Length: 105
Image (cartoon, rainbow, N blue to C red):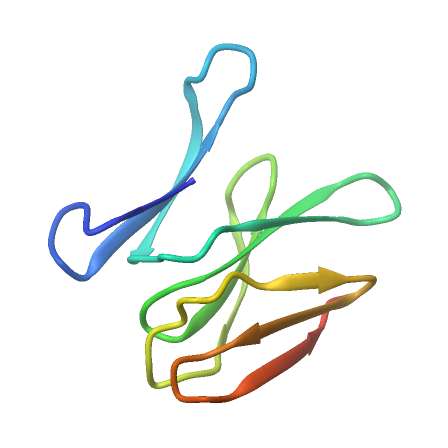
């Protein structure tokens, strides 16, 4: 779950909660995000979390640990849209009126 404007107006976190008891498994701090994260899975069953934030970054995290695996800067403006994922592609629209297609590996 993304939480906007945590410690100040520009900050936010993505928190991963355990289904069993609702406790926090891990947290990723960056600029705030209004969009929803998307979970993507490899053929071996390992999961990744993809989400966009207010500084134009698309972030990819390990689903179990929250460790940042990659960051792609795509926009000078806020990314408000949630990414859509199909097969090994992610698509997201940005506030600067662009649509990005990103091949996931």
